[in-house]
Amino acid sequence: MICELCKRMIIPEHESKHHLIPKCRGGLHGSYVYIHEVCHKQIHALFTEKQLELEYNTIEKLKSHKDVQRFIKWISKKPLNFNIKLRVRKRNR
Image (cartoon, rainbow, N blue to C red; front, side, top):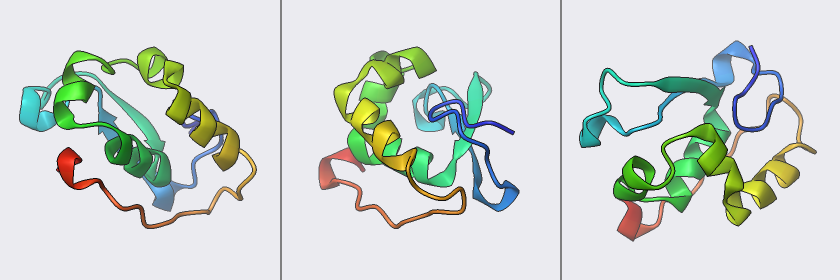
C-alpha cells in the first residue's frame, strides 16, 4: 500500500487510517485515506480538529500547506520503518 500523503510504501505495522473530516467533527462514516502512522501524527500535530474539518479536509489541501510540504520532503529521506513520537501542541488537543 502507498501512503496518500508522502507517496512512499507503507509497511503494514506502520499503517494508519486518517479520516479527512475528524470523527469528533462528524466524519465517523466519511472519507478516509491510508497513510503512515508518522504522517498521521504530523497532521494532528500541525492542525486542530476544526482546521482539519473546515480547511484541510482533502489530501490535496493538506499537501498544499507549507509545513506539510516541508515534512514530506524531510520524511522522504527516512527509511520506511521510521516512526517517531511527536508532541501535539496543547491548542490542537
